[in-house]
Length: 272
Image (cartoon, rainbow, N blue to C red; front, side, top):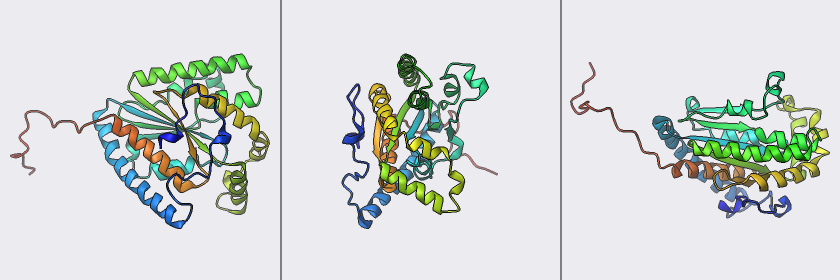
C-alpha cells in the first residue's frame, strides 16, 4: 500500500496514477470478493485498536479525506469506520465558512475540530479547501495560497508533535467515472437529494482542480503527515487501501491495554 504514498516535494502528475488500479486483486467478482474479505478483517481489527486508543487517551488519529465530487468520501467513512464505536469517533464536514469563521484566520475553525487524545477524527473535506477551491476560483492570490500551504504544514507539524497522527487520502477517480456517478445520482430518486447544480459547474474546472491537487499534494506530503493517492474508481479497492493505512497507523502507535487499578484483588472480587 505504500506505493500510493506521495513523496515529499516530488513533482507530481495525477496522470501517472491509475484510478482503476486494484493492486494484486483482479478486476472481477473473485478479486472484489477477496478484497472485501480482507477489508472486513481490517475493520474488525480496527475495532480493537480504537478501544486501546480510547482507553489510553495519550494519542489521537486525524483522517483527512479529499477528492473531486462523487469520489466517495461518504462511502469510505461508512465502510471503513463501520466497526468503530461512535463514542470515540467524530466526523466533521467543512462547508463554506460562516461569517464568524471568516472573522478569524482560516485554520481557526479547523483547529477546534481536531480530535482530542483517545479519539479518531475524520475530516470530510478539510483545511485544504482553502488552498484548492480558493485557488481554482481565484479567490486568493498565489502569494496568499503559498503562505497558507506553509501554514498548513506548520499546523500539521504542531499536531503530530502533540500526539496526533495525521493521515491524508486523496480519493482519485477518473472524469469518466465521475460522469457515471453523477448520472446514477440523477437516475436514483433516493440519491437525488445529493444533487447540486454547482456540481456541473465544478466539473467544467476538472483540469484546474487536477493541477491544484497536484501542487498541494506534492507540497504538503511529509513524513509525519503523508498524502496517499487512493485509486477510487472501484469502491471495494478504495475501502481496502484506506482501511489498511488506518490500521497500520494505529498499530504503529504500539498502544497496550492500560493496567487494572492498583490495590484490587480481582480474583477475590465478587459482585453481589
